[in-house]
Amino acid sequence: MGFPEHFLWGGATAANQIEGAYLTDGKGLSTADVVTSGSRSVPRELTYTVQEGKQYPSHEAIDFYHRYKEDIALFAEMGFKCFRLSINWARIYPRGDEEIPNEAGLAFYEHVFDECLKYGIEPVVTISHYETPLHLALEYGGWSNRKLIEFYERYCATLFKRYHNKVKYWMTFNEINVICFHPWYAGGIGDLRAKDGQEEYQAAHHQFIASAKVVQLARSINPQMQIGMMIAYSPVYAETCNPVEVQMAAEAMQRRHFYLDVQCRGQYPSFKLKEFERKGISIRMEPGDEQILKDGTVDFIGFSYYASTVVTTRQNAEASGGNMIRGGVKNPYLKASEWGWQMDPVGLRLILNSLYDRYQLPLFVVENGLGATDTIEADGSIQDDYRIEYIKEHIGEMKKAIEIDGVEVIGYTSWGCIDLVSVGTGEMEKRYGFIHVDKDNNGNGTLTRTRKKSFEWYKQVISSNGEVL
Ligand code: BGP
Image (cartoon, rainbow, N blue to C red; front, side, top):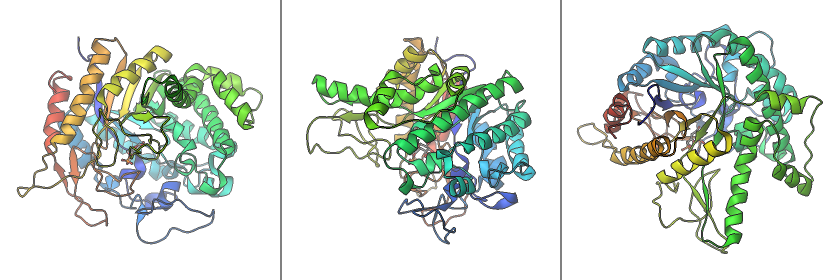
């Protein structure tokens, strides 16, 4: 009973939110390097230079690039079984379209993986997490251009050949469904170029093909490797039992299922094809694409889960707050985070069940956690009981999904296990970590790492394999 014996407990990060060293050792600029923090604006023109000042994520981030040994040692102290990180494409192929990879970039990740493996920590790698080499965005229009498939395949071939004995779990694109909300982050497509869905869905198609092709590629290089998809997934509730609202909620879920259906079942679902027809969207496919999708379905589903959403037919209903992919109205049964994300542990059990019912694939909770402002007490400690409570409740519901419902969950990685730069705010003070990093929104601070109260708590969760919460 309880969690499976080899359950992958750990934490999650993304390269552009932790590494810093944004031009070190031959790294090229990525799309993430040129977003300005504060206004959260993405470049409006397709020609620009990096401005001095506040950049998202700050070009230094938490300097994981130079401090990874210290950080991984802290993860090991907590007993991590795995560590989710991403590879910054522009470290490996600085422009994205060259043929020879940058050896210094490859060596960096090799050292990071070796450091993890030294402690028995399994690296879990996101191949593309909200960054594309900037050159591919400027010269090719990002993922709206089919050429990117070829560049991505080359990048993946390089990674798989180099790391196949060190990395078993891979995910092809972070939150693939975000391409329609934030085409710059998720697809390297400038905001002004994408408006009506045509370009975003075309870009999504290219990512689907790229993902399916590299699933096959990975199998040919080392069949032990497990390639997953990754989606931002959460329940959408109807505000009342009015069937019209229930239908609205179902449609919102279909918008999520589209990505899952293509990547897990290997074909476009009928409801999406009908929607494309109605909206006059036509996806350019090449001969063979349908077969590629069929042959390249994923081995597991990774997903992020933070909060749930409520939809209503009421006009002028009070909005819930939320972020780029959430929205909707207030749920009177739930508390919200400082950023208006409506915390819903039971929602995690619900979606674990609905995903498993629908796809019968192993599930991996690769992001979950509470972004909060932490206070440093006079004695230097951080008493983050609110974070403990959030994670405890979510793990508790995940446990029910496993124990009571029989859902196959292979792991849980808490988002931002060490404080990092937030995507939504571009700043440091929305913190998720078990480990505090001394750096403020203005980039001041010593970058010193300190254990929060939640550090000891998570350590006992892992050592008891989820029995002591
Ligand atoms: C997800 C992203 C992460 C992460 C997280 C929290 O959408 O995959 O990169 O940042 O959200 O969001 P935020 O940083 O806005 O709190």
